[in-house]
Length: 193
Image 1: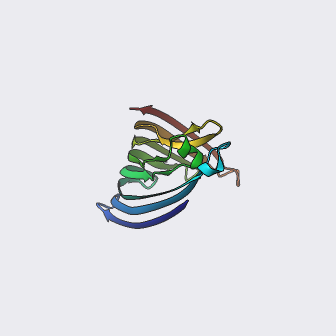
Image 2 (image 1 turned 45 degrees about the vertical axis):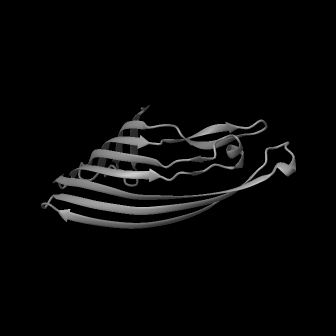
């Protein structure tokens, strides 16, 4: 298996006011995958060996737009919309024999809203994010079985909607130097559609 990645990235940020910024980001990427696989199931005649080659190229332009507003020196809110991909590819020889030779690209559109906060003279950091991801071609790992072998293979399991919430707290009490307390919470509700 040989994989070649090429990418270009650009970003431009514009101050809409003293406290509000609009940022545009863009990434173009190309992933070229070449695979040579020798197909022979355990226990079969060596004369039945088959060598196959496969190639695929995945191109994507992935924009991201972020709007953030500094409510005060210690409180910032933001919203963003972004796209992303996970390239497709090829499974191994046993998965090919089992009928799972390849999988397609996974694509996502993501919306996120959140806030970043500092309190108690910098002793407490509290960050919150609410997100929604719409995924097409969700990639999962499943078993692929031949008569004599079972292996893991990546498959496109369908489309999914993912709603989530994340919270992060970091507390560094001023009167206890060197002590850091942290807590994280994440909630995810994912549904195949």
